[in-house]
Image 1 (cartoon, rainbow, N blue to C red):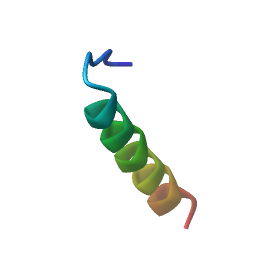
Image 2 (image 1 turned 90 degrees about the vertical axis):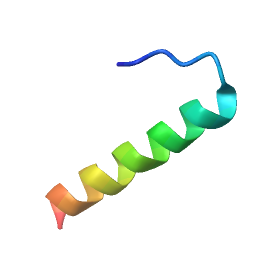
Image 3 (image 1 turned 45 degrees about the vertical axis):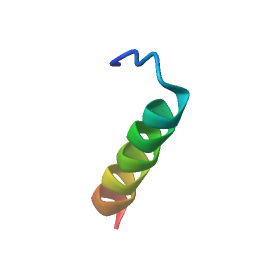
Image 4 (image 1 turned 180 degrees about the vertical axis):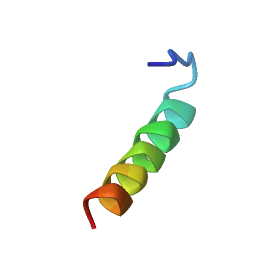
Length: 26
């Protein structure tokens, strides 16, 4: 996983990954 110094950016990445996983499951 990519480590980002900015917490806000890290959260955005996690949310994007969730959307990708959700799309795969759907």
